[in-house]
Every structure is written in C-alpha cells, then in structure tokens.
Amino acid sequence: MAVGKLADDFPVSRPAISQHLKILKQANLVVDRAEGNRRFYQLNPDGFNSLREYFDTFWAQALAAFKKKIEEETMATTMDPMLDAPVRRSVKVKANPERAFRAFTEEFDTWWPRSHHIGKSPMKKAIIEGRVGGRCYSEQVDNTECDWGRVLVWEPPRRFVFAWQIKPTWEYEPDLAKSSEVEVRFIPESDGSTRIDLEHRNFQRHGAGADAMRNNVSGEGGWGTLLEMFAAHVAKKES
Image 1 (tube, helix red, strand yellow):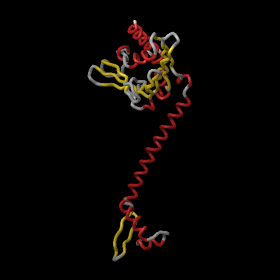
Image 2 (tube, helix red, strand yellow):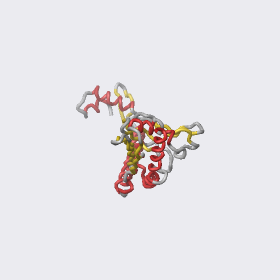
Image 3 (cartoon, helix red, strand yellow):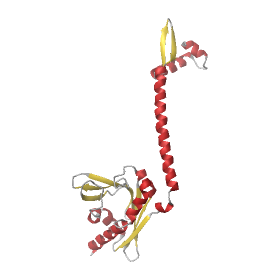
Image 4 (spheres, one colour):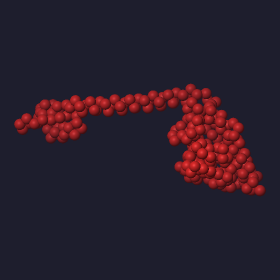
C-alpha cells in the first residue's frame, strides 16, 4: 500500500505516517519499494517471525518465574509452623556491652572454632567486617576466601544482624532471599555484666532443607555451644 493510501485511513498527517513507517522499517517489521514517485510498504514476515520468537521466549521465562514463585510461597505457607520457629540462645558475660560487642565481632577469630567453616580446605581465620554490607567469611589454608554471611544491621554496641548464607548442604548460598538471619543483641544487666541474646530465624527460606538447618544450629555444636565458647573467651580475657 502506498503512503498516501495509508494516510487516508488514519487521523494523522502524511509526514507522521512516513515517520512511523520509517521506525517500523528500522525495526525490520515492514519493507518498501519505489514505483515511480510513489513508495509502497508491506509487512515483513521475517521481522514478525523474529518478534514472535522473542515474545515466545519472554513469556516462557516469565511464566517459569511465576510458577517458581507460587511454588515457593505455597511451600512456605504449608510448612509446619514449628519447623520455622526461631532458635534462641542466651549467655551472660562479665563485661559491659561495648566490651562484649567488640569481643564477639572484632575478636571473632579468637573464639570461633576452626571446625566450623564451609571452605574446601582447613580454616585459617574467621572474619566479620564491621559495617552494613560487610562480609562474614573465612580465610583458608589454600589461600582462598569463603563467604558465609553478610552484615544486614550494624548498631554497636547494641546489636547486629547478619544473613546466614549457608545452604542445608553446607555450601555457600549467594541468594539473600534463600538465606536465614541471625540477630545478636547485647543487653546490659544491673550488675555490670551483659546478656547476649541470639536469635536465628527465617528458616523457611532454606526451602526443603529448613528442618535440617534448624536442627543443626539448635543441636550439639550449634549456637548454644558457640555462645559458651564465646563466654569462656571473654572470661579468660577479663580475668
């Protein structure tokens, strides 16, 4: 169809129609040919086939993502509430909150057990970077670094929160949405000591391994044991 004929069917000017056709041609959706002083346009099947392939891919990916989201939400709502109950542990140390906070974070490597890591070789050093967005990671004897958490809240000397980026298979979990959280609070007591309250929560984010993760951190060698090791470290330093 010629440009003039196309313009007759639309309530816009011929130059506007020509501009639209130029853009459609650049998009490979129409082709044109000249006959004398007139130019004729027609649809380009190849261009529309490419466009269809694009939308087929787009909607396939979108629907797959939608399906995954619904399945995750369904699993979370049907999970036994007891499986997602937070793990809470407490310990008391003879130190003020400022000192206790520093001992827990800045001296993390001095009390954290060498057995507790997810690296491929023995752990050389355990580190918590003291800032929002800071890494929780270990340095290994093979000179690699192994991330296992990310600082989400940093409010010294009152509390800090970090993402537990460890899969139920004890591998690094890069996705924060699939990581549970640990909050550590430092509560001053009237006798000058500090009570450390730890809460590990949001286990449902680990998916099918939520129950296993909760049992691991709440059992022997879990947070209760680790807080006792921390208290022993503070007592040794303060004595």
